[in-house]
Image 1 (cartoon, one colour):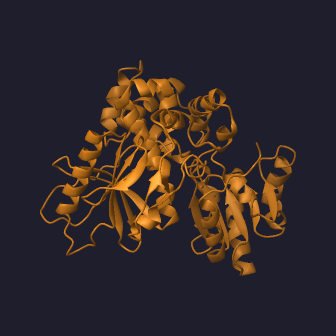
Image 2 (cartoon, helix red, strand yellow; image 1 turned 30 degrees about the vertical axis):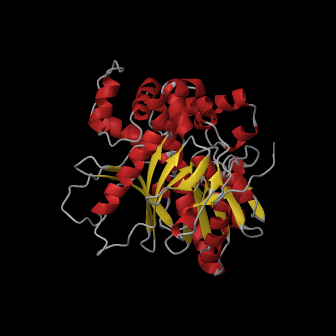
Image 3 (tube, one colour; image 1 turned 90 degrees about the vertical axis):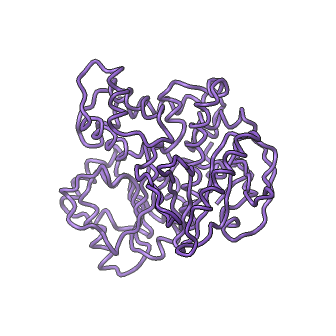
Length: 423
């Protein structure tokens, strides 16, 4: 139960510690931030430990440097409980003049900014941690490397996951503790997480009390619209159908902002490439949860429900792929985007690296018809790009849930089951 499974951010954390005096690891609760930091920390301060919490808070006001003494890198867990620690860490980093001094875990987004006087620029590096990918939970074979695709290497792989397996993994999510549990118990964890968000976390983030029924309505509406660019107004109208209170767009926006602060939702920005001809590109962000299990919990769905409703399953599966692709992309210095233009030509995911290389990706449950549709969209978009002003795409790929093999089609579009993919 306590065996640590390696995370992709392990190497990223080590790299960042070599370049900055302190690293802040942010992300949703229960995604493994503290456990990951503990693996390389030489000393640890648990700010939330009930035995020492009051004393720690007193020391923050009286002499915070005492809390920072210890072998390095020193982990300060749940640092946002005492925001003044931020400036104390920055001061220590300045005066020690060494890299890799501190690791902070928690959420800077929920800290009281009035108690922080310095941004930490030049002293802090930032690392966003998400729930586990299928490769990290050892459910993906990892035979197909995203980096290899960018390096134009030929790939092949065998998929071991069935459509039923993918339905289960969407509902279980990537919560580290759940992967060690029996399936029926593991499925409960996302519902418990959802209940905590609705009843507590969304109000605690900034001290503003939010009506739990309204939060549920928003999260259900959001879940019904994942993978789309629906407006706040559309979400509001959907909520009003299930809300006995008056509701305005500002209220909906404030609820969404609170969910972002606690890393429950994470939207995908629009990609804006150079095109051969003028075409209006949609610039709205695409809506996703940070983990697909939050969406299924909000909708009250289980694996059998997804199998019975393949349309809904398709959107939930897309959210799972977006979660994994974000982690894989960031580990190779890339970012994830979405493309849609006025002609309704879409590309579910675009991974763009720092060096200007990029890959175009469509996400489909599987089946010849859907794969053909995805490949056709990718080729259409490729032909729209002005490659005199930007590089040719490094690869075109359709990610599937089902399918026994990963392969490359005659038109050079890769078809890769998510159960074969890694960074």
